[in-house]
Image (cartoon, rainbow, N blue to C red; front, side):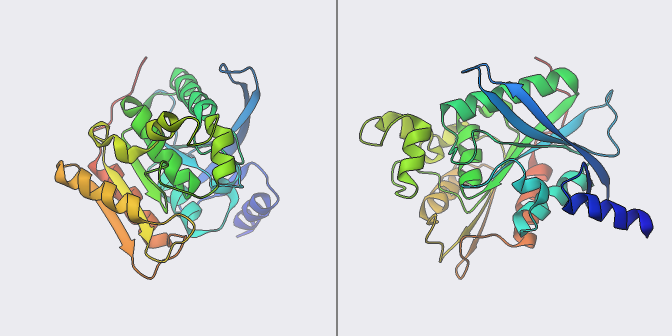
Length: 273
């Protein structure tokens, strides 16, 4: 009992030990120099207690929402974050939460380059088997965007309360323009390039999506269409649409789409560049 109490104190104080309910893990706040522009960037790496460095382990990358940073999916008690931590712990996964140019990323070119670099460096240190992406809101959108841009790096995507069409999406226009390098009117092809709905052929990996019918922050219409197209192509897709849902995903639904993409993904073997 005393040991659990100390662990909880460390968690809420921002220490390096996180109690995941089934596993004890240690976190490291990692600084690196981005190759794309030489800027100092950061991510948090959480290694499971059962990690064996000479054995393959899956990797779960959790992408934070607008206005947050790399610590959201490590410390936040909201359901989406708790579910991601639980799934990573129960599957003995390496768990990574990048800033990806926090706090208004939207997976622009620099954030994309950072994540490619992080994945490449991690595969040099650990025997990474399958790679899964998840996130909510901006993070869910960013997960779909990155999978569309780099399907060869992604084995499954769990997107919560996301948009798959940045061409039609009107929210956070200034932040998205800053991230992408210009407005929709100025660089329309960049917005199309980063919109998963335009590239369904690239989504050969399983996809899990949650959406709320009353979500007025990131309306659900685009991900509904996207899921329908993927299903028509015979892809493994789980769409959980709550008609009375808003801009959040409950714990059970977050767990469901994460478990789905892990179960439906190809068998894992260590990746080597």
